[in-house]
Length: 288
Image (cartoon, rainbow, N blue to C red; front, side, top):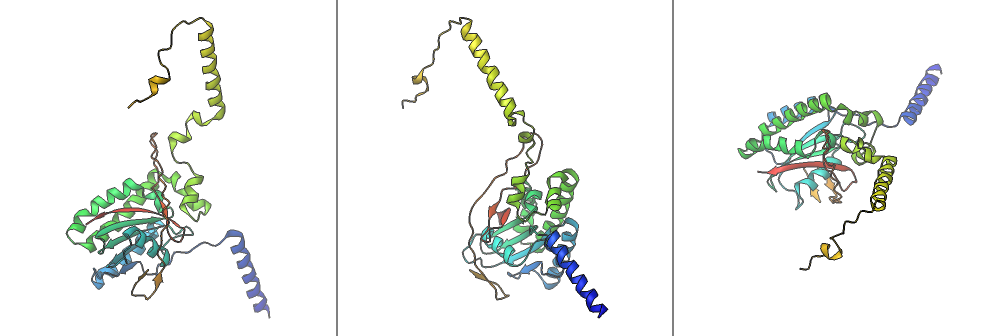
């Protein structure tokens, strides 16, 4: 009887904890991270990539995966990878943070798909740089080598961002965001905008009043100069199926946003869009 009461008490405590702290998605290291639908890897290579992906995910706190595909059912590489990512449960945290390397043999394109805080880690320039690093390997059909290089680049880049721009990613983990769009709307990492005194309405008002006063004083002083410009001066006369037998409804709502780079030495996140599930994704890639 005492054991039953103890078990019931522990259950109640657990439920209360979940309600108070919210649900946090736990990374599953036993889940499949390498889907070789195009059969580009040897079995030993796929196993090695699986191990590397899991190890990288533990290090970076981002899910890391590799997908190869022969038929995207007429979809772009981006749209196919968005739907695949969402359907097959990639994502390290409650915001499904992760990076998926896609080798699309149908569209002859490789693509780096980002989700969650990975969009902040890997902006458009970063993805372009990594893609350039992979061009030669992809061009020589070394798909296994390109996948290993991708995982290595992910680990190195995340380490670099954590060392130099931790203030741009730490709030994601501390504040439990579930989508990147909400995160970037709540945090302005553009230093030039953040620090500009013109953002202060009182400063703007003061500058306006001062300018008006100067103009009034000039006019009152009897300045006789004539205006040479008039109105004429400004007129110009002149559904796919994989080997798991699972179907995915594939439709992407294109709502693209660009996070502008800072001129004050800051660092912006990547551009992003909404997938068919409504989740924010970023990414980019090259033809091969």
